[in-house]
Image (cartoon, rainbow, N blue to C red):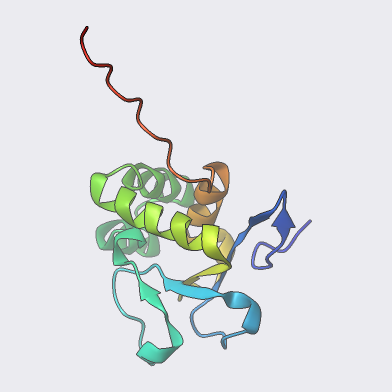
Length: 143
């Protein structure tokens, strides 16, 4: 099984990687995008290229998950539902645009990547095409 934090090339598309924000920068990281609502402790701004807090897990959901009030399946459902909100769509498109131009690494402080929203985000972006947004059909002039 492939390590989800590794990056690979498939059909000419740059895959979006993930890692903990506390891991040092690597040359293959490309654009490092922090996807947390709050800035992580001890992290200098120079270690992150872009902060898209809109793509972080909602704080209420994160607190409920950490407290055990909701399980991972519910946390996953809520996070993915949140990606459909208008304010997150613009942030998603920004990550897609960056990925079209080169490598992107999504950063979060969670230790367990398998139970972290950054892996859900990477999977959601992998399912959606990184190609340019489709053009709207032109309206034909009335004759």
